[in-house]
Structures are given as structure tokens and as C-alpha cells.
Image 1 (cartoon, rainbow, N blue to C red):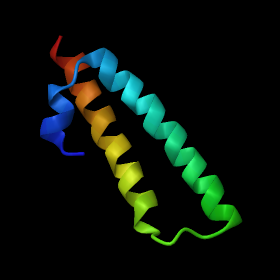
Image 2: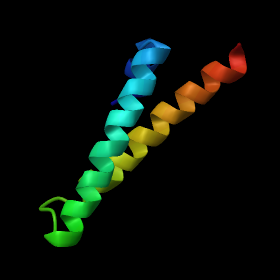
Image 3: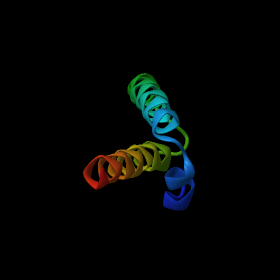
Image 4: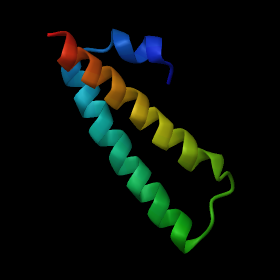
Length: 64
């Protein structure tokens, strides 16, 4: 997900998306521990997407 797409989202949607992505990331890590994923880059991409969303959310908090 690109930063421009994230910035267009409302704050409530963004918080909901962060929770969903964190749950997916945790599940992905557990699945990877049991049986390795075909594409390890998915874990890195998910972590970075969460970081992007948290950054945009924090920017909104600071601009109020």
C-alpha cells in the first residue's frame, strides 16, 4: 500500500486497517514458524506497511 493511498483513508478506517494488518502479520509469523512461507519478503512487506500506516496516523495526531 502506498503512502498516498493511506493518506486518503479516514482516521477510523486507518486504525481499523492497522489492527487488521497487525493480526495478519502475527498470523503470518506463526505460519512461517511452523512451515516456511514460499515468499519470505511478504513478512518484510507487511511490517513496512504497518509502519507506513502508523507513521501517517502519528502525523495526523501531531497536526491537530
